[in-house]
Length: 202
Length: 202
Figure 1 (spheres, rainbow over the protein chains, first blue to last red):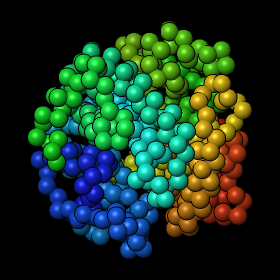
Figure 2: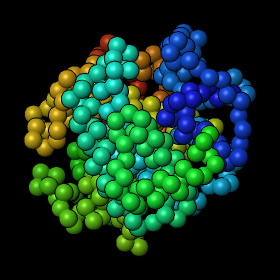
Figure 3: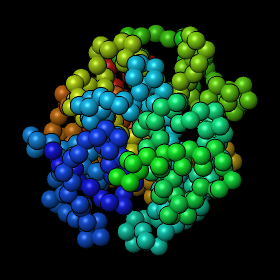
């Protein structure tokens, strides 16, 4: 197997942290977005989305979408369970992972894509939307702070893929105009906890 | 169990079709969005997202997020498998379901939310973004048409949750300014196929 990677990417980091938590090592190939390698015909034949991460399997086929890649490794290496265990816990982890994507990751990404000069000319921008999304991300951090007053991790007492999604989203937020307010003490406590794990540097 | 439902909702329809494909019947409670029942303190205590679908379990706890609810029923009623079977097929179905969400459902929803007078005053709107997203949705339907030249269903030769996501997204698109162009013959063939299933009227 080979993993097409992008060091600074949010979704690629989700997969790298996931693999580190599993203790699994996969050879990686860095794709250079600045040189638009991901928009080359050769890369698009592998992943028509033109995005990373992308997993090349030993039979030469490809798997894209970070959570699909994570689920594949969860099936191959069930321990520790990062998607929960048992019907109900698995559904709850899915619920929380989705909430972290829709309430944190997407608004933070949208703020970055629609407001940053970095994306001007690279992606269509709608600055008004970017401002709405940054305000929404902040409001949702406040909500998450109240949730984290009730338990150690996002989905319960165990670290899961929902924590990985949230920590990668908030890391991007810090660098792109949606920083976590220091006044959110539960979120801050959780942040210190998850980022002190060795996997956080994957 | 009880399912909090919204007849016209996209995500609620995904769950209803999923249950119909499984042959499972769950008592439903219609939540009246026009009366803002979903924004009441009582409902928010059940689902802080204020959204439907929401599943109330027999122990009095709640599960939200349509795909989390579907996964829960997949675990309780494995046949027919709508999330695939085996590590690789399950990962491929996840990949295609995600693509259908990000390439069809979200752009179609965004076009509706940011452009329709229905949402004015109900949700913050950024019309420029809505126009960008409707153009993107159209471009992605054209891409999906080329994919469907290669196989019967979205993720392979079997009907899965990825088809459910795509058909619900495209149904919303028809009603909200992102109709499928009749020239996309592969997409049209697939549309007739999936909407002729009895579950499509769930």
